[in-house]
Length: 233
Image 1 (cartoon, one colour):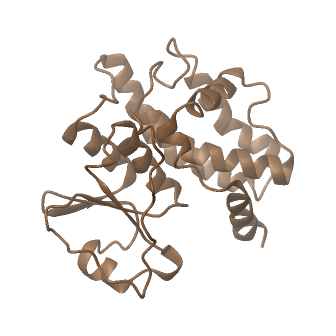
Image 2 (cartoon, one colour):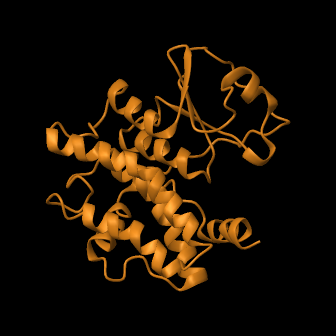
């Protein structure tokens, strides 16, 4: 489970930083402290209690070091994981990789129905994000509702406050984006994503009781300003 003592984060590496010693036996999660994709893997690492097993290597995406693309991950994005003398990437692949290759609580249930629904939810993540992003340029209140109604409906499928009833990787896949959308929509459009969606409200509240998640949350002011700059100019 999550560490009881708040983790001291390592320095952020930029274009002036030297690379860590690659493939020296250390398992490293190359990340960015504001990136929602990377946050998915960070939460998973924390929840499984792997803070001492997987070292965080924060990368400054606005001033990223050239060695990251040349020596670590040619895709030049985060997250990526250095493990077992290889580098792998893509956030949804990585959360599953951590769950199957490392110790700690199992974060995908064994029941067939739940596993099938988990894949359906994983597959919807891109659609969810694109629907919300596109709503910022249209009738936001009307268009964004489709995405959040989907989550409300999904939360009705199984008994329990989480998307599969019990806590799982699926919750970690969605919450980094939901938290950012919730902040931006409330601030700019006065739209509360939880209004009329009691299960979504409970889901968010329950996740906010989990240290593994809350310790990864970005600064709300940063989130709002970043989205304002990106979508409102």
